[in-house]
Image (cartoon, rainbow, N blue to C red; front, side):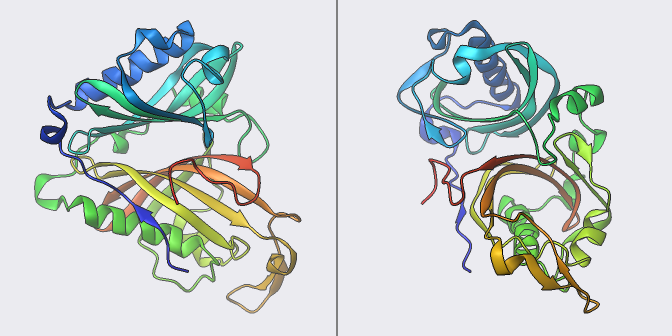
Length: 294
């Protein structure tokens, strides 16, 4: 399968006044404050604004705008001043119940031109992962540490490495070229995976994931080696549930009916290897689109 990779760089000079790291993060806070106040008029919204929530095109003020009640404790940003984009993974409250959220904003001329909101009420294990994220209180230190200047690579190289992760998961056979550091760990919905990234990939146990599509790398922080992505994992079920592991053992795994995971996934990359992964998952109708891809 030829993966669809989407990333458009729009330098701040194209859109007028640039928005640096502090500016981008301030826009996210203003956006969440407006959500809690249920009032989109509190924001400088572009006339051409496009707004989606969990893949659905909505008008500002609808959906989560009606039910958000507070910010949460967990906050992790991926700032991309070059593209005028900022991505956020964290927690909020909905009707005073913790929920996990992934947010992408596109800033142009000091206005919000695009809003992509992803609200996860129950995660990959069928439980609400937001309380687990709130227990962490703050991101792992590695996500905040800059990569030494001499070791930094281009945004294109960072995206290439992140995309190899998804290619390794798609019809995973345990034999691929996996750009995973020995210390790579994965937190899914605030909970650490049982196996290291490398051990999980080399197990071949994800073969049931039949397609990873609409791969969009929406924010890249070259200074910190971070890539933030939105993707969809399709699980076709049926015959794809039965397969052989690398040692020849036949096994069955994955859902017993077709469904899709909508995923927000962030990577810490250094030295050409992925060291940390953090993600949110939500089960959605099979084959659903993001509202942004093709």
